Length: 144
Image (tube, rainbow, N blue to C red; front, side, top):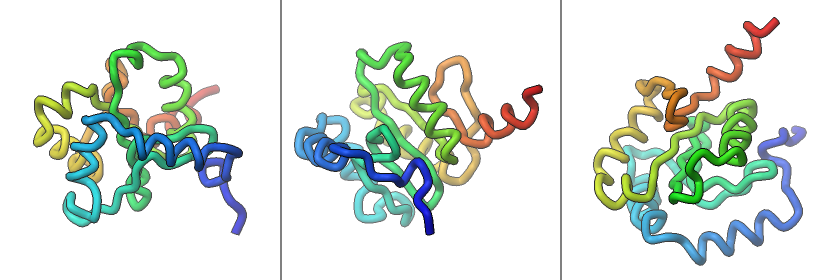
């Protein structure tokens, strides 16, 4: 079976993903403690995984959901916007949280992740907080 763009190995990405796993932020560590070993309603997550040209913080492959934890340097990032579009075109929905969301309200974050996994979360185009894959596909179909 041929690999698609999201699963194709990119040179150096695996080593860099290992580096990120070994040097995780406190927020990544805390969220990972709730996602690892199927602790969130039995959903399997992986962390710091290469997907195409990018490395994502957390991914649930079963539901094609990427969860990103962003610091202040990600505010209005063109790179992140392009990355989200690319992930969406590969079939992945992207859910973003700020570091302080993890620090101050981890229970709410976990409830939001569960809502996304269950398909009960709606797109938030203004904030870029949640970008479901279906939206990009629908836009492409309706474009002239």
